[in-house]
Length: 138
Image 1 (cartoon, rainbow, N blue to C red):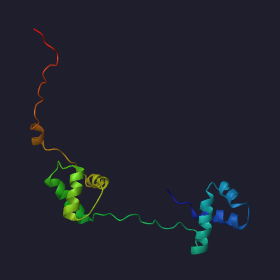
Image 2 (image 1 turned 120 degrees about the vertical axis):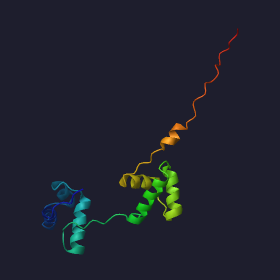
Image 3 (image 1 turned 45 degrees about the vertical axis):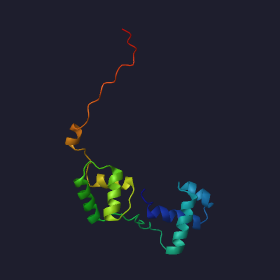
Image 4 (image 1 turned 90 degrees about the vertical axis):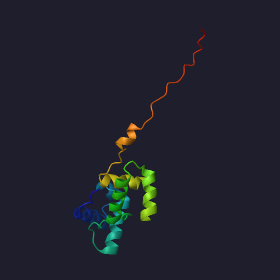
């Protein structure tokens, strides 16, 4: 979501300062929530400016660039490994616990696919025909 422009913020606070109505009415006029109006007032009091605050940053990735490269090597060693098995390998070899979703997102970011080996596809056993269950009275 994009931050509201500073001009709008200033007009909202100015309307509150000039008492053009209650906070609820001012929020309706500017099509914002009451909570947002109170946030602006608190921000002006604490920081002295109404400019949007910088982004908080979010969570730090659990796997560094070096560890992501090691995961790519793990996938290269066993391209038919399941997500759960790869998660266990990461936990054991890299000593980092991640969720299956994180493993999926990591493989997607690295543009790696987990393909079954062609040789393994040829090893499938043929289906046996089942004997008929019909009573064959001859």
